[in-house]
Amino acid sequence: MNITLRDADPQTDYERIAELLNEIDTPKISAAQIREWDQQQFDGARILRRRVAVDETEQVLGYGVINHFPWLSEGHFLINVVTEPTLRRRGIGARLYDDALALARGYGVTTLKAEVREDHPEWLRFAEQRGFHVDHHVFESTLDLATFDAERFADVLERVEAQGIRIFSLAEAPFTTENFRKLWEVNAETARDDPASDGTFPDFEEFQKVTDAAWFRPDGQILAADGERYIGLSAVGYFADGNAAYNNITGVLDAYRGRHIALAMKVRAIQAAQRWGVERVITNNDSTNAPMLAVNRKLGYVSQPGVLRLVCNA
Image (cartoon, rainbow, N blue to C red; front, side, top):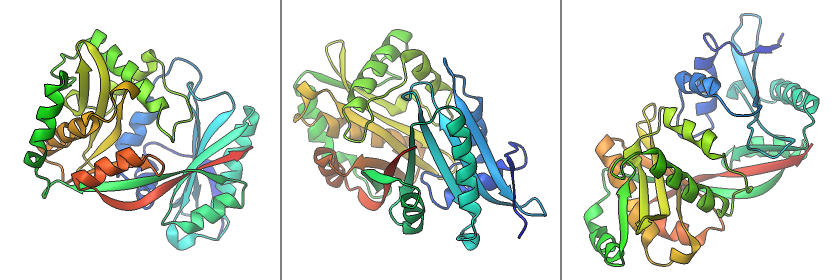
């Protein structure tokens, strides 16, 4: 088979790229979302190249991407490779990987990061053969909204509010620059405290651009406040392609933990997803984050195959 590597064409290749990615990733994505990611503007240098492997008929058989965001540590790159399932072990993935690595080396790469689902051991072997090791194991869980009864947790919301903690959405805050900055502050602090965090987080100017994302909805940004101070959040986004919501993060400042605030916020986030009419909520949690895993079990989340976050010294 004669295989050629070339730059991906957003108009002709992205539908096929989305199909390949949806074989191994959740939530489901679309070609439009990939194009949206391409158009994001950042303060600072972003390095991004999407490549495809095609046969003589220009059919896309594989895809590789190398990416560096401005907020990542210098020399740190994200890499992803996927191929047509029926054509694996033919060297296509290896060529795409080597191609992406060559570009990263031109920019002084020191560390490569990747993710594989734990139910795809062939991709883990592929990565390990290239020097990657597992840095974190992240559990994926799903909640069926058809069976979720928020009334079971009404007393939790009442008890939290009785402590003087307000639970509300960014849409109710209201959505102003000042309140969005406060959301960013609590988001950054709780995200860095996550066991799976590498300690980096976008600055406020970069973070503001999240409001342009198709998944972002102010009523899905659930906040907890003590007076005027934001002390926790649970952010849920809407993904039309899979008719699902994704709980990106739930976190509470350290001084306020153990008071059921995270549970109360997650209930409000689930209620937002119910209003959107989606079928399920998907979330991820690091395997060492026992408190949040316990909250998810209480809510009725069911564990799915997780994600292995991999690191390689390049």
